[in-house]
Length: 175
Image (tube, rainbow, N blue to C red):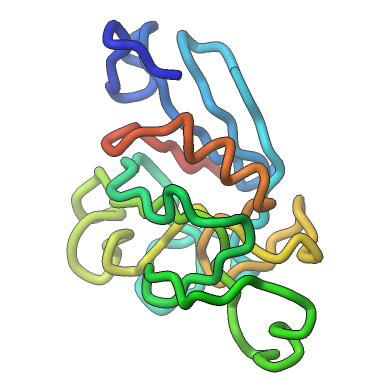
């Protein structure tokens, strides 16, 4: 979707940019271009609310970037552990077999912080906290904070979004 004339800059500084915005209050993620919303999807962010500290189980706020995209070409409902596919496909039977798993499915968009001391470095580092935008079981509710800090999406939605974002793309996470 992105053309060579599109730049990735900080949101609000360039009317030709493409970026993602996560609204924690509304529980949505939006893909923006030229200050217009191109796509929006429901999400589920942290049950513990917003926060940056490692181990908090919170979704970090502020300016981020897409660091790495994982899972291109994998089937819908592919199971990931440690950012690697397990070879499993999520099913009700698999969920019953592993009831304590925090399911990371289909695609992963791994985020890195852009604000030193807020979400980059030390005990607030988004990348080292393994904060992702990722698929989850379609039985999980969207629009309700329930994750352990990540941004959960429906599998079909993360597949669509994954194909529209690039490494380095800005991501704003707002309360």
